[in-house]
Length: 374
Image 1 (cartoon, rainbow, N blue to C red):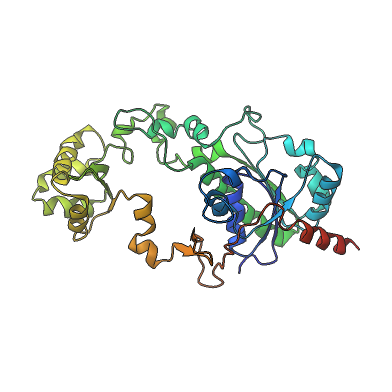
Image 2 (cartoon, rainbow, N blue to C red; image 1 turned 45 degrees about the vertical axis):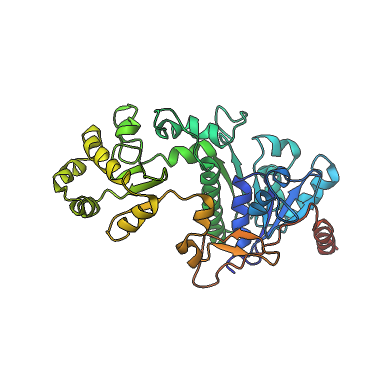
C-alpha cells in the first residue's frame, strides 16, 4: 500500500484528526493512537455492534492504541522517544495545550527535524479567538455557511453532516501529504496550522460573489445553489417523500421541460437564478406531487437530467451503485464498515477493520522503542 512504513502519532479525538489518521491507516500507515486512561470519548458515544461503538470504529479502525498519561514526565519522555521514529504527528488540542505539555512543535522538532506536525483547531494558532472552544456547528455558523443553509422558513438549518470537521480533516490530510512530498527533497518536516473556520470559509468560494464584489449578503433563496433555481431544488412527491433536481445546464433544462411540453419555460431557467424562476418551480412542484418517489425516479431515469431521490441512510447504504462499488464492506464479525473513499488502481487500500481496545498495543510499542534504544 502507498503509505507502508509511514509512522503516525495520533493525539486526536472525535472527527477531524481521527478521520485524517484513519485515512492514512487505510493506506498502510502505522497509526499510534495515544489515549488517556478513560480513552477516546467516542468509545462511549452511540450504539455498539461489537467490542466498541460504531462511532469509535468508524474513525479508528486499523490503529494501535497506547495508554499514556502526558501529565507525567515519564510518559512525555516516552512520547518524545517515539517521535524520533515517526513521520507525522497529529493533534487537536486547544492552541497552547501541546506546548504546555512539552509536546508542541518546537519541542518535537528537536527530537525529529523531519517530522510533519499537524495541529487542527477551531480558530487556528494565531487567531484572535485561538483560545475559544468550538465544534463544527459553531464554525459553520461563524463562517457564514449557515446563513446560506436555510429551511423553508428562511431560518438557518443544521446540516446533516459535520461540515467543518470533515473539511478541516481533508485539508489537514492534503497538507500532510504535501509536506511529506517536500520532505523527500529537503529532508525537513513542517508545521501545519489548520483552522476549522478557515476550512469552511474556503468552502464558501461559490457563495461569496456579491460579498467579495461589493460586500453584500447574498439572498440564499435567490442564489444558484441555495434555492433560486428550479433545477437545483428539493421537491415533494405524492407519498410525502422528496427528490432533487441538481443540474442547471441548458441541455438538462431542455430535456426535462421539452418532455413536459413546456419549452416556453426554458428561457426563464437560462436567465440565471432568482424570483423569475418561481413560475418554473411551482410548475415542477405540481408535476412531482402527482408522482410517488418511485414513479418520479423511474420517469427521470429515462431522461438525461441530473436528479436524485432523498434517500434515508439505510436506503443510501443499499443503493445499487454504492453496492456495486463496494462502498460498504463487512468484517469477520459481520459488521458493516464504510470503505475507504480514496482508491488507487495500483496498490489499492487494504484496510484493517479491527479497532483497538484501550491500550491494546502499549506494551508492544514500549518494548519496540526500548529495544531500539538499546
